[in-house]
Image (cartoon, helix red, strand yellow):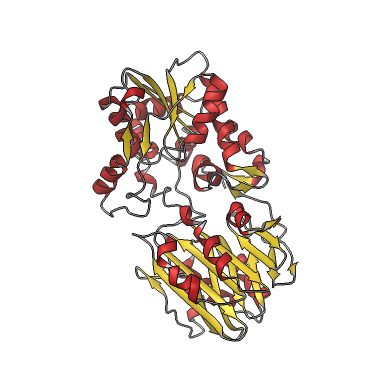
Length: 470
């Protein structure tokens, strides 16, 4: 995944830029960068690897030495950015959030014009440079941005830093958010709505799907939207969004409370746990919602130890990743031993970590471990955003179980049948997952309950990873 932040100011913007980017640290763990423009000194840029260190510690020097009235930056799980480009548009810097599925097709067309690409990541073209190359095919930024929105298969939101200001662009179907904040001496653009509140900004607007705005230190103006339907990613509320964020008027924390309430209502008369707990940290709000609705005691029978195990420090070998995920969890035996626990996680992807967490609770003396999830079974890998949790589909526990149940790879129609929570195939899949991972019981949040919990028109929500429907 990834997140970005940009700021324009009558004074120096670097303080706001530094902390605004840092507030996106939950969205990326590998690369981070800052680019600024100073009206006297021109452009400056810095990129660092943040795999084993927080953003703040890697950019402390830049936070004091960089200067500029305009700036953009990002934290990303993928390509190094922002990048600095010189073209017939002049010099500009660009950062992006999204995914391009037709990279090779677009690159071939551009290479016909004797263009070449510098930025490579594991042998592939840096998608941010590709977006810049697309924009450069047209005579001005607006035409170039619209051209990128037209030909990219996937999604693409972006910030473009120029000597005249910053262009902020939301992808054409609004799959990811772009928020605008305002204060007396300037504006900011942000992926997360909370990132600018402690910096003195007030919420100004949330860009519409496909909308382009340009802002400088004194003014912001919209250059138009696209006549397209919205398909914002529902998984932002489920997992990626920080609890204090809001999208389309619904806060992440409140949505997760609603999901927990729905799970509790469906569970009435079916289970009788001694306490309810959330898997730290993304399952905590669901557990609070469940406890409030069910009157079952909310508790924290284990704590995630983070001071020396930050999220960014994860070895590449899967067996070591699983070990470290387990090592982070510190049990509180007085709240576990002899107890019937109901544990809520935001989702089940591979199932490995939740299975090990359950065994860890049994080993710590739990009598029963009932598992509930804050979203329906994930059935399809995301093809619109670079979600690291939406991996290749055969890594998903749902797909592996379906292959076992069907005796081979299922066809498209059979897969769809497994997404129906009222079907026997769905029930067989859930039971098989429960059995494999050692849960006392397992229930997933229903799709209709999840969509209702957002308070957003379901037609505006992307549910591809659960339904396979675009």
